[in-house]
Length: 174
Image (cartoon, rainbow, N blue to C red; front, side, top):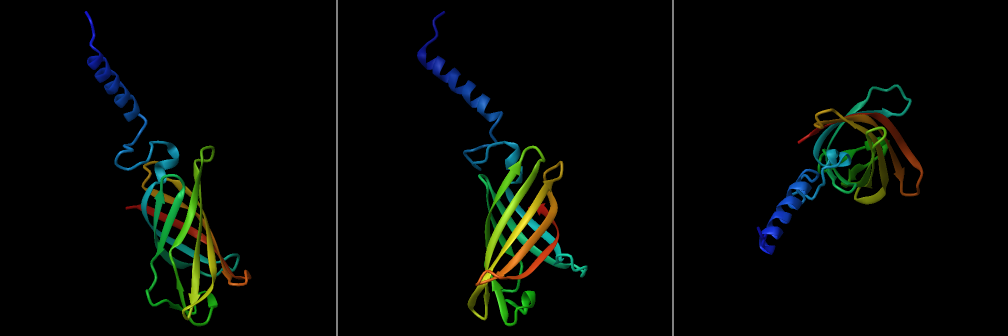
Protein backbone atom coordinates (compact mmCIF):
# COMPACT_ATOMS: atom_id res chain seq x y z
CA UNK A 1 0.00 0.00 0.00
CA UNK A 2 1.39 3.33 -1.06
CA UNK A 3 0.69 6.46 1.04
CA UNK A 4 0.31 9.68 -0.91
CA UNK A 5 2.21 12.81 0.09
CA UNK A 6 -1.11 14.65 0.68
CA UNK A 7 -2.33 11.93 3.06
CA UNK A 8 0.97 11.94 4.92
CA UNK A 9 0.92 15.76 5.23
CA UNK A 10 -2.67 15.69 6.52
CA UNK A 11 -1.83 13.01 9.09
CA UNK A 12 1.28 14.87 10.29
CA UNK A 13 -0.69 18.12 10.57
CA UNK A 14 -3.38 16.40 12.63
CA UNK A 15 -0.75 14.81 14.87
CA UNK A 16 1.01 18.15 15.38
CA UNK A 17 -2.27 19.89 16.17
CA UNK A 18 -3.26 17.19 18.66
CA UNK A 19 0.10 17.27 20.43
CA UNK A 20 0.19 21.06 20.76
CA UNK A 21 -3.37 21.28 22.07
CA UNK A 22 -2.34 19.22 25.07
CA UNK A 23 0.03 21.95 26.29
CA UNK A 24 -1.50 25.13 24.87
CA UNK A 25 -4.65 26.83 26.16
CA UNK A 26 -5.49 28.21 22.73
CA UNK A 27 -2.85 30.69 21.60
CA UNK A 28 -4.90 31.60 18.54
CA UNK A 29 -7.61 33.08 20.78
CA UNK A 30 -5.94 34.18 24.03
CA UNK A 31 -2.20 33.96 23.39
CA UNK A 32 -1.49 32.34 26.76
CA UNK A 33 0.28 29.01 26.98
CA UNK A 34 -1.04 26.58 29.56
CA UNK A 35 1.87 26.86 32.02
CA UNK A 36 1.64 27.31 35.82
CA UNK A 37 2.78 30.95 35.70
CA UNK A 38 -0.14 31.90 33.47
CA UNK A 39 -2.76 30.76 35.99
CA UNK A 40 -2.93 34.40 37.15
CA UNK A 41 -3.62 35.81 33.68
CA UNK A 42 -6.99 37.53 33.53
CA UNK A 43 -9.15 40.22 35.09
CA UNK A 44 -9.57 40.48 38.87
CA UNK A 45 -11.48 42.67 41.33
CA UNK A 46 -9.60 43.38 44.57
CA UNK A 47 -10.55 44.37 48.10
CA UNK A 48 -7.65 45.39 50.32
CA UNK A 49 -7.32 46.71 53.86
CA UNK A 50 -4.23 48.81 54.70
CA UNK A 51 -2.96 51.12 57.42
CA UNK A 52 0.37 52.84 58.08
CA UNK A 53 2.91 50.06 58.68
CA UNK A 54 3.39 49.27 62.36
CA UNK A 55 0.89 51.93 63.48
CA UNK A 56 -1.73 49.65 64.99
CA UNK A 57 -4.38 51.85 63.38
CA UNK A 58 -7.47 50.16 61.96
CA UNK A 59 -7.01 49.36 58.26
CA UNK A 60 -8.83 51.40 55.62
CA UNK A 61 -10.56 49.60 52.75
CA UNK A 62 -9.36 50.00 49.16
CA UNK A 63 -10.65 48.53 45.91
CA UNK A 64 -9.28 48.15 42.41
CA UNK A 65 -9.49 46.14 39.23
CA UNK A 66 -6.35 44.39 38.03
CA UNK A 67 -5.54 42.94 34.61
CA UNK A 68 -2.69 40.40 34.59
CA UNK A 69 -1.28 39.85 31.09
CA UNK A 70 0.62 36.79 29.89
CA UNK A 71 4.33 37.56 29.85
CA UNK A 72 4.47 39.40 33.17
CA UNK A 73 2.83 42.81 32.79
CA UNK A 74 -0.08 44.12 34.84
CA UNK A 75 -2.45 47.13 34.73
CA UNK A 76 -4.37 48.33 37.79
CA UNK A 77 -7.34 50.67 37.81
CA UNK A 78 -8.33 52.17 41.18
CA UNK A 79 -11.86 52.56 42.45
CA UNK A 80 -11.73 56.20 43.57
CA UNK A 81 -13.88 59.27 42.92
CA UNK A 82 -13.03 60.84 39.56
CA UNK A 83 -12.79 64.25 41.23
CA UNK A 84 -10.07 63.02 43.58
CA UNK A 85 -9.73 62.60 47.33
CA UNK A 86 -9.29 65.59 49.64
CA UNK A 87 -6.28 65.15 51.93
CA UNK A 88 -5.32 61.61 50.84
CA UNK A 89 -2.32 60.28 52.80
CA UNK A 90 -2.37 63.48 54.82
CA UNK A 91 -1.48 65.59 51.77
CA UNK A 92 -3.57 68.80 51.73
CA UNK A 93 -5.52 69.51 48.54
CA UNK A 94 -7.40 67.39 46.05
CA UNK A 95 -5.35 64.24 45.44
CA UNK A 96 -5.84 62.37 42.16
CA UNK A 97 -4.00 59.34 40.89
CA UNK A 98 -3.62 57.55 37.61
CA UNK A 99 -3.72 53.89 36.65
CA UNK A 100 -0.87 51.76 37.89
CA UNK A 101 1.40 49.86 35.53
CA UNK A 102 3.67 47.09 36.64
CA UNK A 103 5.10 43.63 36.38
CA UNK A 104 4.49 40.24 37.91
CA UNK A 105 6.79 37.30 38.46
CA UNK A 106 5.97 33.66 39.29
CA UNK A 107 8.18 31.62 41.63
CA UNK A 108 7.65 27.92 40.77
CA UNK A 109 9.27 26.81 44.05
CA UNK A 110 6.95 28.77 46.38
CA UNK A 111 4.08 28.80 43.82
CA UNK A 112 3.61 32.49 44.64
CA UNK A 113 3.48 35.59 42.50
CA UNK A 114 5.30 38.86 43.21
CA UNK A 115 3.65 42.00 41.86
CA UNK A 116 5.22 45.46 41.54
CA UNK A 117 3.10 48.45 40.55
CA UNK A 118 3.72 52.18 40.17
CA UNK A 119 1.38 55.11 39.63
CA UNK A 120 1.53 58.92 39.75
CA UNK A 121 -0.15 61.35 42.19
CA UNK A 122 -1.40 64.84 41.33
CA UNK A 123 -2.45 67.41 43.93
CA UNK A 124 -4.64 70.30 42.83
CA UNK A 125 -3.81 69.42 39.23
CA UNK A 126 0.00 69.44 39.66
CA UNK A 127 2.34 66.44 39.67
CA UNK A 128 3.09 65.61 43.30
CA UNK A 129 4.96 62.30 43.22
CA UNK A 130 4.37 58.61 42.78
CA UNK A 131 3.48 55.47 44.69
CA UNK A 132 4.76 51.91 44.51
CA UNK A 133 2.85 48.78 45.48
CA UNK A 134 4.45 45.42 46.28
CA UNK A 135 2.18 42.43 46.66
CA UNK A 136 2.75 38.72 47.23
CA UNK A 137 -0.03 36.50 45.87
CA UNK A 138 -1.02 32.89 46.37
CA UNK A 139 -3.79 31.46 44.22
CA UNK A 140 -6.41 29.14 45.67
CA UNK A 141 -6.52 25.61 44.27
CA UNK A 142 -9.33 26.48 41.84
CA UNK A 143 -7.40 29.58 40.65
CA UNK A 144 -10.31 31.96 41.23
CA UNK A 145 -9.05 33.79 44.33
CA UNK A 146 -5.71 35.51 44.91
CA UNK A 147 -4.69 36.33 48.48
CA UNK A 148 -1.65 37.87 50.12
CA UNK A 149 0.17 40.70 51.79
CA UNK A 150 0.52 44.17 50.30
CA UNK A 151 2.93 46.99 51.07
CA UNK A 152 2.78 50.39 49.43
CA UNK A 153 4.88 53.56 49.68
CA UNK A 154 3.89 57.03 48.52
CA UNK A 155 6.76 59.34 47.57
CA UNK A 156 6.83 63.10 47.01
CA UNK A 157 8.24 64.50 43.77
CA UNK A 158 11.62 64.94 45.51
CA UNK A 159 11.71 61.23 46.41
CA UNK A 160 11.00 61.66 50.13
CA UNK A 161 8.59 59.18 51.71
CA UNK A 162 5.12 60.51 52.54
CA UNK A 163 3.59 57.33 53.93
CA UNK A 164 4.11 53.56 53.87
CA UNK A 165 1.07 51.31 54.33
CA UNK A 166 0.81 47.56 54.92
CA UNK A 167 -2.06 45.14 54.84
CA UNK A 168 -3.75 42.29 53.06
CA UNK A 169 -5.60 41.97 49.77
CA UNK A 170 -8.01 39.47 48.28
CA UNK A 171 -8.73 39.39 44.55
CA UNK A 172 -11.53 37.49 42.86
CA UNK A 173 -11.36 36.49 39.21
CA UNK A 174 -13.98 38.19 37.03
